[in-house]
Length: 126
Image (cartoon, rainbow, N blue to C red):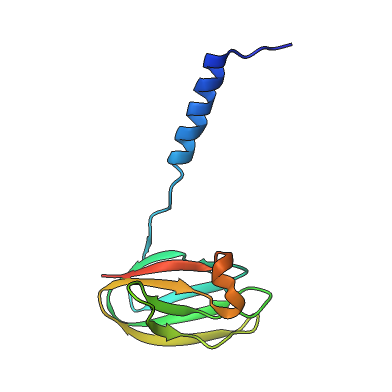
């Protein structure tokens, strides 16, 4: 039977903790151009964190899920809704045109509180 000493267990725990610290939030996806494809599915928005040039952009929204979803873009400071898609049945697409000032925005699916289940992200207009 193997016996592990306390220092060995402590070292293993430290290695796991360091590995978890390196697993932080992934870097934002940088997009060029004026069209941003956005995919909605069960409790996920993809890309989840995106950086795009400020100005007029087209959000090409696709519901790849099995239930209805809706994309909403909100100013990060305050709760002002900047743009929103209609509720989309599974498989449907829509385009949302919006002019964004430089700043930080939140993406979410407020439909049936999907955002509370993780369906949210960020959009940084630079």
